[in-house]
Length: 367
Image (tube, rainbow, N blue to C red):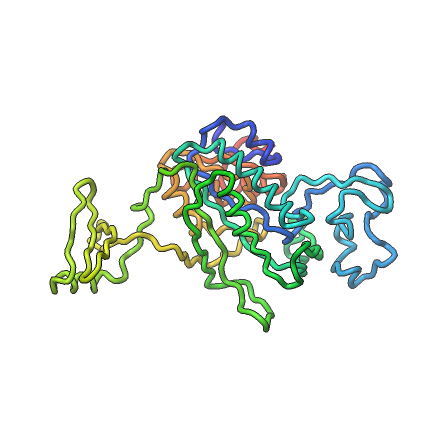
């Protein structure tokens, strides 16, 4: 297995080529359900001159709910269909996210992540960022400034058994499905976005969070909690309580850490002191990280600060970080910055070029 390479291929096929127990950590964010088409589909057979869309309703402004339909390069009304009803052409597309139902989407991701389970070392961790969506919601993005990504706008099919406007619950559907398959579901981390995408809604709050699930392959696993500790905001209060005899330091002989025992009930928490003498505490499970614009990649981008804690805590220096959905390559770049290696897969060759630029890898590594 070559390291520090992103392979331009279907992730599940690529994962099958990796040896068992060969990577230390997986950090990824798969394409969200029903959000956008990344332009990897192709029509095979049929009439090459057929637009594979309902041309009888085509207009310059809007056709059957699709904006800019003329620029959709043959996806059109058949976006969720495998066969063009006009000419019989077969649509071949290996991307994940455009399945006809949420359950189909979950099933596909479970297949991918069970391969991740196989290649992960016994003490490995899996950090999964996943967002939710609404049933029958108008989705997609046709902003012209992103036309280089071949992203299309489309209307998402309503899922069976759900009412229009229902929140589907994709993150927890996936988390529970993976837990049932043997993954240890260790934590749900809230990614709080201080600068969320604006929403013109009047019947609910603006959404400003996503989930990061921490999974492990085994009951005991590698987790470097000290590498991601945060400053104890209540440090001064703790010192006062200690001075007043209401709490005390208890040294852990194995490490330079402490626990504070509170009055009336046991309030133990691990603390360390950093090189500046500041008291550090265990990182909390709500991470406030702003989204960041990225001019050279597609717009579903990890902020670097969001995944740094995942890699620091989940992979020792010199280890290997896997991302089966590399996208714009942020996982790869952060892994190299933190002195870890990476390996990953990306279906879109244009994004592999972006990763090549971002990771400053030279040579013919992307094929």
